[in-house]
Length: 281
Image 1 (cartoon, rainbow, N blue to C red):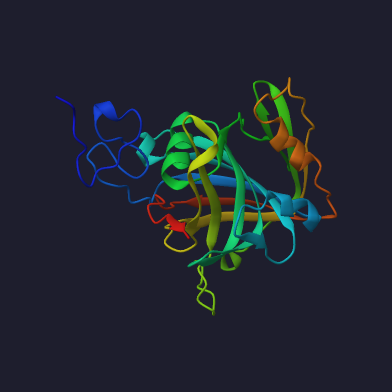
Image 2 (cartoon, helix red, strand yellow):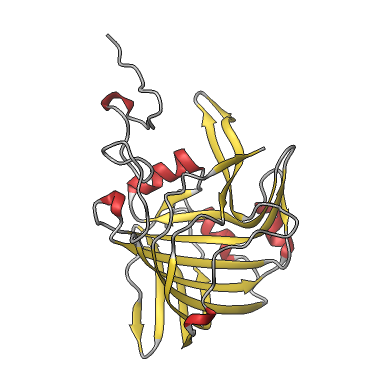
């Protein structure tokens, strides 16, 4: 007798063993409060680039919004409740866009790619949320004489070098506060493009649509922040170096860096389980 799916429960492949435990559904079927978890440290560098180089990266319905400023952010997370206290690291590349669909409109950074160093959040984030997640190695930064050296590698090939220097502490009263709604009511948050190919018809999509991570609703609290200067270098890769990612790295390597727009280190506690993620049409 074949198994049946329990209504109201979240499943992922393999479905044969029952509902899937993950960041939005624990072993007891309930979610996670994300009040004291995770504990995160983020390293971020931004630079102004050429708008004409970013336009080919825009999915359907998207256009550039404001200055073409690219931000590279690597975050190290620990004490994650849904992983029973374990942690993992992420690194994303974003730039500001506006999405205009047949019904919805939204403004925020487009997450073009999100590297992570653990399989479980990669799979749940791709399938459930529509994040463009792939894998790489991200060791802890090397810190020497006030300089932070952040790297990203794939199978031993180091494709990213990011350095943060001349960092000055930010006073707590100047920490960023909760996201405020726009006066025009247009939703804000991080934007994504979810795409899953159709089996056997490889040039067609089973799923292809924009998704939004709303800016509001997070329990994250900033506990420390520093601002300074930074640089980013994506090393050009051959197919032999990164057979499935060389085109991504080389696209970022080719971006013109007109000027750097500063660097930040942010320490925080808490977050949200992203169950408020929604489809845009």
